[in-house]
Image (cartoon, rainbow, N blue to C red; front, top):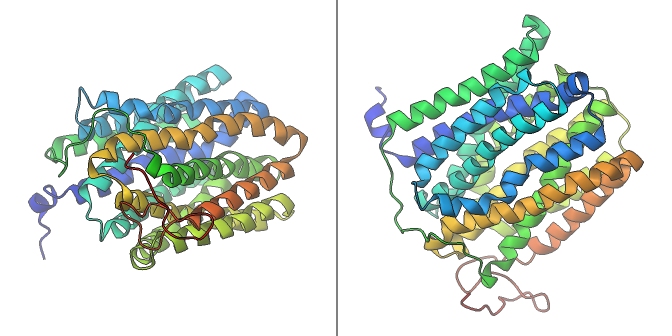
Length: 402
């Protein structure tokens, strides 16, 4: 049966799906090589790595500025421009093997990555139907995982078989993202939101639980991205060909499980999904603290990787409780809240890492406990006026209009 390419170009879901494959091609290569590249070529220690990761998160902290950019351009065009920046920043990373060079290229890559993620979340929640949003978000995650598998496989193959230098691998990964961004920009029409978005910052008290969940998600992500990965390289001596294979296994699991997790969230609701994630993270982070076998550490890392798909529930929770006109400005605000922890923690925990890596992961388990408490305050049927449960009686809390 012939594929209706013309019809596919008229569907915003297809555009989102294609863009979902572009981000991992660059970011997965950047992430897989970073620790080895930084240690081998730029002589990084945990302190420099913490500083780099804190600086990497600054554009995420400034994601609220997206709402001001929307005064001069459409969200869809901003998404394309952000993908181009992500690709360019990744492509040139290998050319600058120094502390200053990594800081500059990381900043370029990070601006593209974080602004794309902010706009992508906003577009998805505007364009997708609430009844099937989690399923589509799961499909996007699966598509991203498929692209990440390709990126990790290429990275490992390049080192083991082709023996390519970092310069070429970074250039290939970033270049692939640039090509997809250009194709998306030229092939798809401009899609319009059903509800016009507010062009000013929005911060409402009735969204407090959503903000709390987003903040703790940012803290959890930093433990994974910065310190769990660094542990594999520094303590367990995984090399530049092995780290991508671990990422590949995690991405393969996500490719299979993310669509199923999305369907389960649509069926069960957000509270069970967020509860399962929080409990699992408590166990995983404590496991990081005590593990002494390299393959057991890699197994915990893969499990940690898989549970990122549960974060779909935070997005669909807001889609259900939020004013439809608040989606774009709140996406920027939520990314800023997410990255308050992202800016502070890598720097602070980088110094704690020098004293005791175990203490870093014990702190991570504490963050997961807070996430568990917040997840239990999500109503079984969230919506306007049913944003959260009270602490005392676990019933819908009274909320103000703002």
